[in-house]
Length: 298
Image 1 (tube, rainbow, N blue to C red):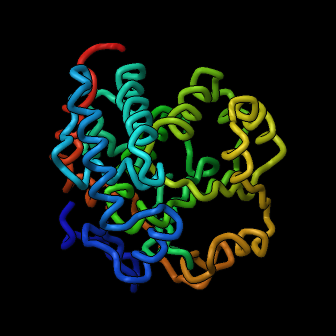
Image 2 (image 1 turned 90 degrees about the horizontal axis):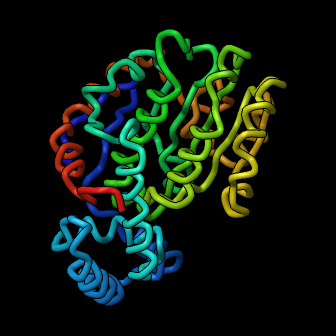
């Protein structure tokens, strides 16, 4: 992705980074992911061989950046990267209502609602932070739950194109302030199954934490649908903070959070359409990736 496109958020700038990371992150990648020039070369060669032998999966296996996107979250084990890649592209075939022709410019509505925000600053460990406001700002008659999921998919696909995010990972904050029964009724077991499958088995991202804040009592009804589907690893990374800002700050650095969440960043009300505009600059990237994968159900 290009690096000269950005959105101004008050005195801060949000852009998706294509450049390689510096020495600090090289060391983290080595310690946390087993990444070295030698391991990268060896893993890419092995993964490339595996992919060449799979006639059904059409992916750009000659592109090292593409391979590394799946190798980093699987600690440079080629077989594990291949399994996640299979799951990722099988999901697209299994759930066309979420994935077919998914590009930012076609999903403007969810961004216009202001439900999704990517904070301009990373947290203290270099992680991207995505805010989902699925309470007061979410009006089901104007924006469906499926649209929110598709918007999240688009944002995270942009994030995983960033080398620094591939190494450091992502934090997600779910602000449930204002969640009501009209919202709760939108959640179905089928939707929960798809979301959990995508998060746990498909997307090549290091999800470091899901932070649920301002949740009312009715949120328990929503979580009860998801809870039986969660594996231990993901369950342990879900944190419930309620209105306790210090609890949130114990996990997400104040220097990346706006003041409304106990942070230090002065971000003005952010028009969601600007995030869509930024992502839409990369429509051709999404369209190209939409051509990859399986041509039929496998």
